[in-house]
Length: 74
Image (cartoon, rainbow, N blue to C red; front, side, top):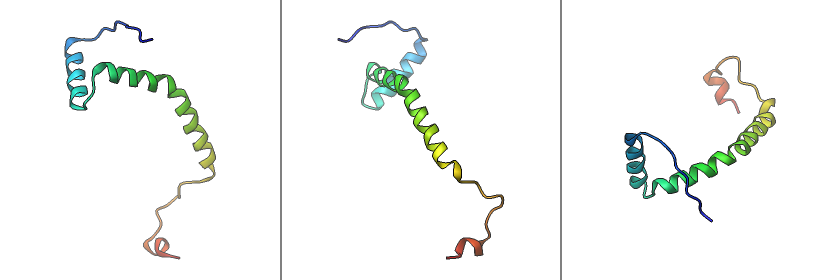
């Protein structure tokens, strides 16, 4: 079941958002529904990102930029 909600924003902002949605072959309602899905799933993506960073924490950025010779070593 789809429910209607009322949101408030300036006319100019709504107009620009509608125009952008139309340019992208969409509607403002469709973009809002996509945003809601993204919004509620945001923590999941953040958790996945943090887990990935933890897995990659063993890596360390070099203290200095490698020389050309070092980069070409095999």
